[in-house]
Length: 219
Image (cartoon, rainbow, N blue to C red):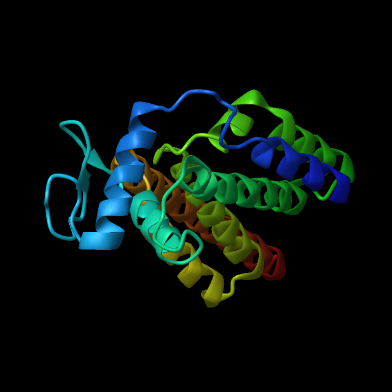
């Protein structure tokens, strides 16, 4: 797995500023908005500390924008570059790899499945490209994966701390991409419904077992 992770890093960072050899229009808008916010506290349309930075007649999800603002003020020393603009996508892609591999190992408890997941997340073209383009939508997948890992840990351990971290992570997911406004509530409603059915089913089974034991003892 260590070698697989090194391959994952290499595929994400090798010539990051040159490959792909195009500047996506959303990358340009995101980078310029983040630079304006880092220096002047406004987006390029002079909106002061906007929740959604305006980008070509639409809003841009705040999580990627303000992560890039932080990087510009620290690593970039006030400057922005294509490499720096794409760095949050790289970090999210690497985190997705680690979280995905951990989740599969917790679910299947089989090293073969874990290695298969590691290979898939490392070499699948979609996951490679999502880690090499500065598109705010690419953060949603990572945020969802982290949320699901905490939820899985809560289900397996029943520790409240994992449930709290799960809620916090889902909260960050809502800031990663607008589509999450629909996906996260629907998922949580369906999950709650399934858990409720599971609890009622177990209660019914326990009630039937108790009744059968009582009937047996009476006879």
